[in-house]
Image (cartoon, rainbow, N blue to C red; front, side, top):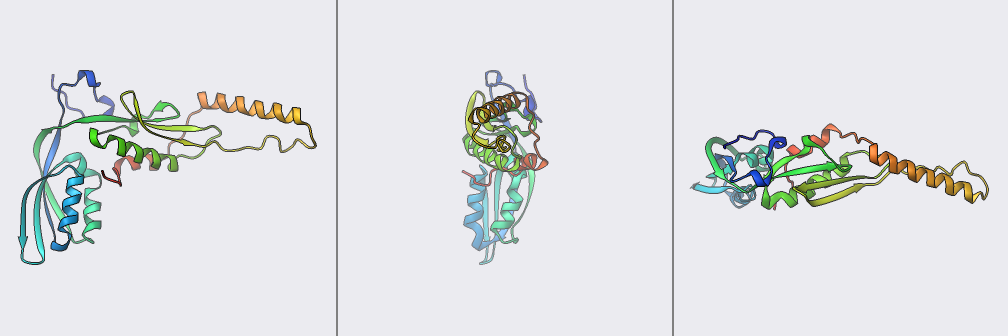
Length: 221
């Protein structure tokens, strides 16, 4: 059975998959000659396949690559402009599908999967993108009264993890003198309260966290 997936939430389990194909585009890139090496590295990072290269004199180069559509629509344009100081440009057209080794990367916040943060990535990039996403999210999600673990998961394997530390609240501030017993009781009560909060507490995820998923991996490997 052939199935088209347009939402990571509908990605089938590994046991159900015989083969996976992803859409590719043919990108024609125009750039000044001095940036050729850097742009070719960008295309390599994006799993590109070089198809053609023309150098026109000492100033202008045109290269043609086939690239996975997913790699192109994340941050390819921004990185190309950055590398070429704004002088690079490209156009593209769809050229069909190619077989690829893709996996679903899930993000868990407080041990709960967040479907909107799931992405489909190439297996070779899963660890690096998972680590990058976890690091970004740990900076974007506000601290709670309880610790919040953030995990990047493929299947049942945790690839990366970060923990947002709990907010500290001094519950013994009003305990004057040396009433150690009362202080211990208050601290124990606070500990139990935080444990209960962690079990039932919902974590608010800001819009910036969802945008972080769309930015791709800033440290391509």
